Amino acid sequence: AQSVTQPDIHITVSEGASLELRCNYSYGATPYLFWYVQSPGQGLQLLLKYFSGDTLVQGIKGFEAEFKRSQSSFNLRKPSVHWSDAAEYFCAVGGGLTGGGNKLTFGTGTQLKVEL
Amino acid sequence: EAGVTQFPSHSVIEKGQTVTLRCDPISGHDNLYWYRRVMGKEIKFLLHFVKESKQDESGMPNNRFLAERTGGTYSTLKVQPAELEDSGVYFCASSSSPQGDIQYFGAGTRLSVL
Image 1 (cartoon, one colour):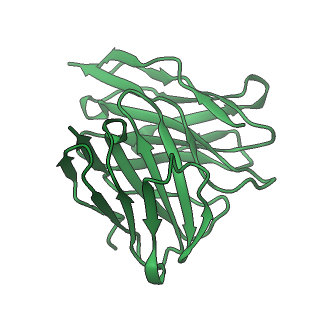
Image 2 (cartoon, rainbow over the protein chains, first blue to last red):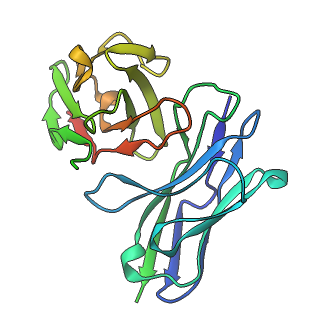
């Protein structure tokens, strides 16, 4: 069964500092990987996705993530955090090239706080 | 283009009552998904519709939950009778194709069962 681990429940960073949110997954083949963000009162917004190809993917709002097959990781990064990035971030895995449907399995989320 | 819309945004009911949540997917999206997040836990898959057919309902917790998608457009999720442990945020998502496509999420319905 597929699973996703986000080891950090809460993270606090200063505005302008760099950010890395960790995500490890368990899946039997090459998965589809996603990062979503949820701001207060909003729905889940897709930041970026990895399906295949280049393992470094760029997303919206200056975020990027790197797929590392050997480490089963898909960590999210941003070089300089803005106060508006304060939100909850979710890593998710979906059925990959071998099928298995398209239901997403989510991690428990990482709540990001940005100090001014 | 309108996104995924969910009604109501918040519902407070007493144990034993019935509640119906509604989801309007993005127009033209055949695939519709329901997910739930119980307080402090991860977002969990409930079921997947392709048009009006249930493709996968492996995540439905028990027979108190009934999902429908008549005509392949909007969907409803009914909880009858509601229990305390049903409290949480119910998300709906839609996508245009079933495999390897982006799921677009609504803002969710927060259900509080007292």
